[in-house]
Image (cartoon, rainbow, N blue to C red; front, side, top):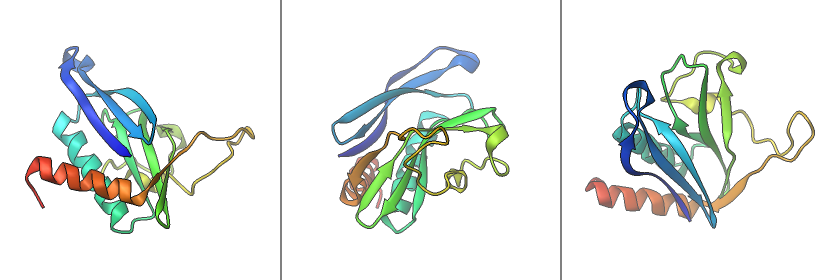
Amino acid sequence: MFDIELLGQPEGEGEGLYSWGRITLGRFRDEFQAPLYDWAPGDYAAHWLESARRLVQGAPVVVFLTHMLRADAEYHLGWPAWREGDRVYLQERLFLREQLNGAFDPEYPEVHAGPRQKISVEGEPIAQWEVGLRDLADFVERRQRSNGSA
């Protein structure tokens, strides 16, 4: 099972406006706060659908952004997803501006994902989750049906 969605109505105000979101990877669920400063709820939904679609169509890696302020923000949060055959491996990632190899482009954040690593620079295992490529294809089909698009 793969799903990523915003939950309920936006909370906060001004630059502190956000929506709660949830990512589901098999039996694992994680909630997050998605800021609504630069992106509206529909921007997140469109980004997630397009990222999943690209992965299903053969892209080796995409990033499902969950915290997008503006392209030049100090940091971004997301879930890089690496396709390996019919399996997809996801890890939560903090993208620090000072550590990026160039400007952050929310249209193609995967340029900063790099190859999938299993061990951190400190020598610790990196938490990751595995889902089937079919789970991503099912997500795309569900979203397209709910949006009434093909």
